[in-house]
Length: 170
Image (cartoon, rainbow, N blue to C red; front, top):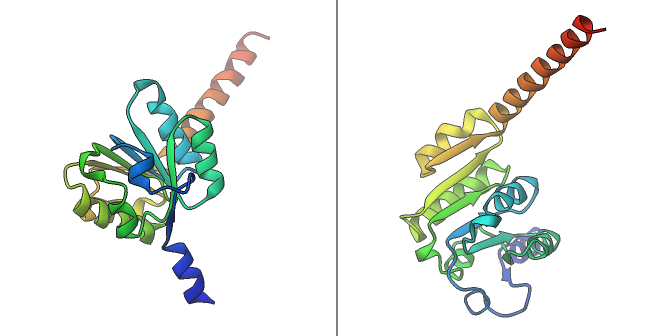
C-alpha cells in the first residue's frame, strides 16, 4: 500500500489534463503550496501583474488558486521531474510555503539545480531549521515562530495600551 501511495504522490497532473508547458507559459514566480501561507504570498503579488504559477498536491488548493486568477497545477514539487515540466529556467522567484522540513529541503535542492538564478524564499516552521534552509540554497527564510512572536508582542502591547486608555478616560 505504501508503494502505491508513494507512486501516486510522485505523479503530476494538470487541472485541464494537458501538460504543464502547454497550459501555462513560463512563470516569473512559482508558489509551492497553496495553504494559508501560499495564498497570502500570492495575494501580495496579484496586483503586480507577474506571471505566477501555483503548484499544490491538493485539487482544492489548485481550485482556490484558479479562483483567485492564478495559473496552477496539481503536482508534487518534491519530484524533480514534475518541476522540470514546469520550465522554470526563466523563473525569477520561488516561494516555498510548505511546513514540512524534509519536503522543503528536497524542493530547495531541486529548484536550485533547475533554476539556479531564481531567488528562493522559504517558510520555516521552526527557527532551528532556518540555517539549514539557508545552507541548502534559500536566499530568504521567513520563520513562523518569529512572525508569531512579533504578532503576539504587538497584540499584547495594543491590549495594554487600550486598557490604559480606557482607565485614563473613563
